[in-house]
Amino acid sequence: MLDGQLTSIRPIIEEDIDTLFQWYSDQEVNLWATGAWPLNTLLNKEQLAERFLTETTDIRSYAILAEDEQFIGVIGFREFNIPARSAALFIVLGAKTHWDRGYGSDAMITFLHFLFRQWNLHRISLETWDGNHRAIKTYEKAGFAIEGRQREAYFVLGRYHDAILMGLLQDEFFALHGKTRLYSGTQNHSEHK
Image (cartoon, rainbow, N blue to C red; front, side, top):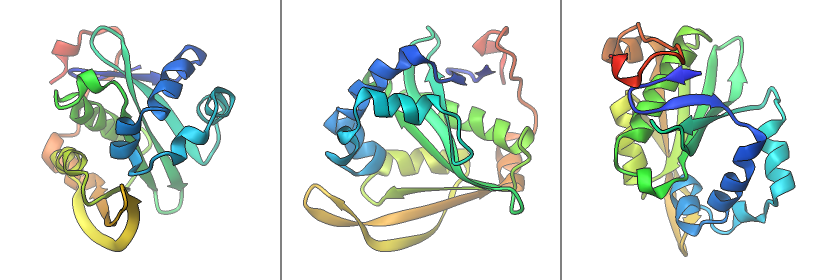
C-alpha cells in the first residue's frame, strides 16, 4: 500500500466493483472524468470487474482510499512504453464528497512518486478536455505542463471542446516535490512530509 498525507493507494478488489459501477453510472462523475456521457455507463458490473480485476500489460488500476479507508477513487496508468520509460496517467475521484478537498492532488503526487522512483519512469503524460478546470489545476499542482491541444477532440454536452495534452518529466517532478517519500502502509498519514 502507498500512503500519502490524505490518501492511500492499494490494488482494486472485488468488493470495489459495486462502487465503481455506481460511479460509472453517475453523469457528473463521467462528465469530469472523461467528458463522456453516457458512453462509460454502457459497461455492466461483469465488464467492470473484468476491466479492473484482470491485470493486463495495457492498463494498471489502483484504488484510492481516504484516511478512514473509504474507497473514493481510481488511479492508474496505461500506454506503458518500456524503451521510452513512459506511461499515460489517469485518475477519477468518484466520491463527490471528497472533491475540492485535496484528495486528488495527494493521491496523484503519491502515485507519481511511486512511478518515478519504483518504476523509474522518465515521462508521464495525461489528457483532459479544456472545460475541466478542476483537473487541469490539480495536474499543474503535481507539476504537469500543458504541451499541446487537439482541436475539438471532445464532444461534451452538445459542444466540441479541445483536448488538453499535458506531460511531466521525472527531474521536473523531483525538483518540485523532492525525491524521498515513504510508502509503508503501517505508518500514519501525518508522518509523510
